[in-house]
Length: 349
Image: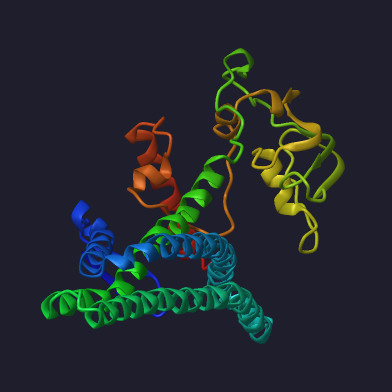
């Protein structure tokens, strides 16, 4: 078992630890106390109060460290999210000369994370001082009882005293490892809590509702109607679309124009039910899209994204994610696209 500490105090485990390795610090500490108690039986009277003090310190540190770890994890995620967004939009940021604003935003998020991380480092120092104090008491008691016993003529042999002192000098490290291994499990459970939090998020509507499936030819016309439609991105947020009433006739080409944040993309998300309606509904060819399954809806609609992107996998997987088309249709689509692309370049478009 090998532990490597990074600059941020993260610990990496190389190789699975055995049961003996995991319990070795506890075994060492118990053996040390047994050796000291054998050489100086009076030390037994100190074991119970020292154990009570040790358990109190461990539990107090455990509660604090777990909460600090949770705050650190929660405040670290926005740093990664903001950095990824800045990388993706670097050309836009430079075009509008907003580098300084984004740098300050990143520094603010890092400072917010450090406010949670620095107390975690301080709590580790707090624990180290108190464990060193308990270890010093054990060493002092072991040496003191040995001297008293030797002075009264009932002391152990010199070899036994030396063995007890050599083990007493190492007990601080064992006590430290016991606490830190216990705390490591508790604090790392925070990661599991975050996974469970995502796993408990409400899922989308069913892909297929057997009793509410649309006709095979739907949509045959393409008439779209927003009926008193309102939507928000999640419960508790303000409405991004408010009481929209629109009607698009079949075969019409519609352009939606508006400033940033006006709700253009939200209309598209609402069509595909990426966001669900808070009020009202959308109908396509007089069919309420909220009453059918998501697969039936999204498989009948097509979209050309603003940014070209390919997902991991083959070209066939990207062209036909649902694997509902045969190779002939796919080759025909590719041939048509390449022909039009070549004609556009031939005419200098």
